Image (cartoon, rainbow, N blue to C red; front, top):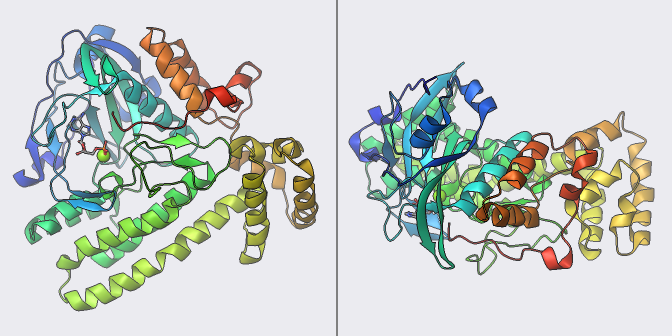
Length: 472
Ligand code: AMP
Ligand code: MG
């Protein structure tokens, strides 16, 4: 059987300054680590032999219909603006269109491009497996996200701070890789024609019902507000919410030093390069507003009356914190069994979170245990939970079916950071069994399994991972 990807490319028809045509760089000895059959089927992709898939998903051979390119973009990184970023280690092979949806097929770690700056264009095995597991877990948790179609080893070494490591390539699938930074790329150059082409492309691809830049801004804000509230409701920390990692589609992309929290601490930061906690857990709600302000700024040049646009867009952006807050309240309300939490319910949510923080309670397991009556065991001082529970029980009397609402909002399994790290270490010794097992268990994260209790367990003190590294 021959691998067939039914390409239907559109980005490569945009003007030349949107990208650089660039083939992936060949590698020495590719081998296939994983291929996502279910996703392939969903995309209408016919699998090929293992050997053929290793060649194609490592970038050694091009599938029929591919039109590889590296996308140009800009972006604010930790608040500082870089007018020239772009795919420094990725190649968009092309797109597949299915049932009205369109998906990018992209290789990540597939060699240098004109946007590589000082980088080698490569990825090592650790971040490739991390992104594979986390993105697939997020999908199963119901979060809009890029996905993983395949992972390969290159048979070559890459060099990072810690020394030589096995090189790997991830094939990722996303509704697009268009970022706030893609708009900033054209706005920064005062390339109004490019900005207009991009705007029309995005509306056509992602928001066909939207008319005009202001409506686009509002539509993207609505999706991003939901997305960040959903991240927070699962204890997810993206880690690098730069504007070049914030999509127009409203999907999570660019899993770098991201992680899920174990004990609930709202100021948790994992990324080793996030010195000031800009992208700390709780700050994600603020940062997304800041990022949308950058999108607004980049859209202003499209407006006939720019002064008026600045005024209007500013009002819209100022309304976003409330939008995020409402989405947050809805999600956290569901986590404690309230179908539609109101403003009056907020103190109940906040007081539980405060008690969890004070008691070093495990975020995921505490919420899940609410429906089993075992949550108090998660608290250093169980009496602290009991006082909250009295109030909570009173409020639950008004709810129809709190138990099932809670079970749907509170997963049993998340990709725990210490498990992800252990899985990577084991893979480095050549054993991919824990990687495949994590994928399997995390594909159904709301369903407890007797044979996977260990994956629901928080880390022992000696297992706690303090930092995740950007040296991807
Ligand atoms: P990230 O922090 O992964 O979103 O990457 C930020 C920018 O750095 C993007 O333009 C990437 O393409 C680029 N980049 C990251 N790692 C590498 C690498 N190993 N080689 C070349 N470019 C890279
Ligand atoms: Mg990025």
